[in-house]
Image 1 (cartoon, rainbow, N blue to C red):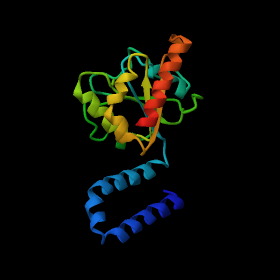
Image 2 (cartoon, helix red, strand yellow):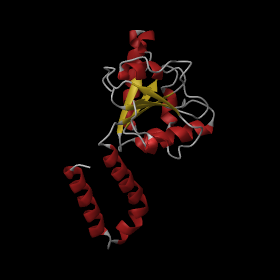
Image 3 (cartoon, one colour):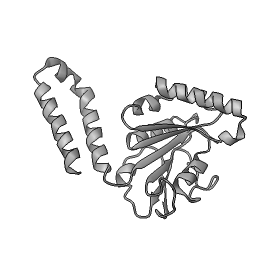
Image 4 (cartoon, rainbow, N blue to C red):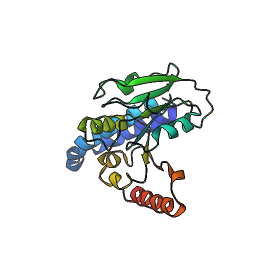
Length: 210
């Protein structure tokens, strides 16, 4: 961890210690402490590859987006798709994903190595294709929530039939304000201009409200 981040973290702990005599501060510690631990974990991870998790419904276009971000056809729809509750993790060759997969709920994830020199905008990062969020299987949602906790950026990929479903996606609320959160309209090229604009407006409203 670099000096600036260490200084800021030390300042945070100093401020919390100064507030400790206050009854309200003591009562709030059960809510504050998990956030402090989360911040410490985040700062340690900031020195390595970012963990970017793509979540969305079946057929939203996550694989195509992931390939575009990496700059190579590393995700093959139909062959390397999340199965049951197991995500697929795409990592630069030999990147450490030990913390990411440790005690992850559901079946063991599939790990795919790729060439970090692929040339995409995020080609040196760890990208995760999460189980589909519109599945009736509750374990899918548990896996998505756990992955969100361990990610630096959450990319929510929606298509024309799943934008409304995001209104009840609790993992969005859990993640908001703590990490980078992006909403993407997948397969937008299949839509008429007016329909695409309407769905983009819905996503923008969702992002503002949530």
